[in-house]
Image (cartoon, rainbow, N blue to C red; front, side, top):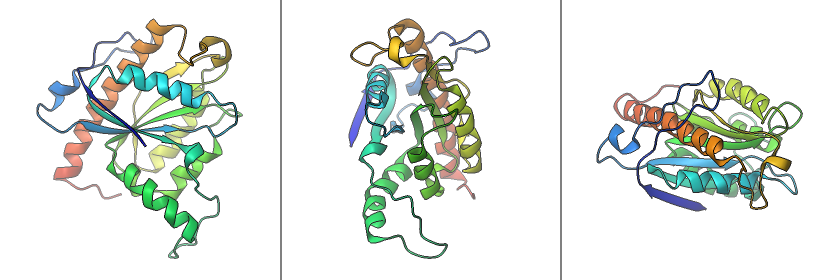
Length: 228
């Protein structure tokens, strides 16, 4: 598990595209004196030679300069979650139960999520869908942001399909995304995007929206428990 706590403030970002409105409030000002927001960052790709860990490391480096947030990195390549699921009302296998004993509390503890995903065949990886399907309540009434990558589309088709799935899981997806186009040429040898001004601005803007929703929904869940 990787955890990063950030003590500074979220800055103002530029919109990622012409239709976007920059929105990056000071996280500390949203709820002065409150506990940092817990953000689970999920690396969705499990393919050999994947870019996911490098992209996640870059994102966490940008996020570490923001404030009022703590991060838990969850790499699905390190999660041994079976594809065979138990029937309704039955218990998971001992192997699945051992994985869930570590995994589920980490998801449940999160106030928000950031999914780092490539685009596979106009969609998102099967390992991510499996993670989503194994859990219900941990996603309820929580915001989700996206860092996507892949080809000319920058992984945006994967993101749009994820919005449909997450809506069914009672999650709230934020409008702005971080989209990395052509990772094979757009990323440096260290996995960081070459166009740092645009990508870092997009990351700060997305984090600002995510933090606003995370604060609002954490307060709402505490005062009026969500009935999914």
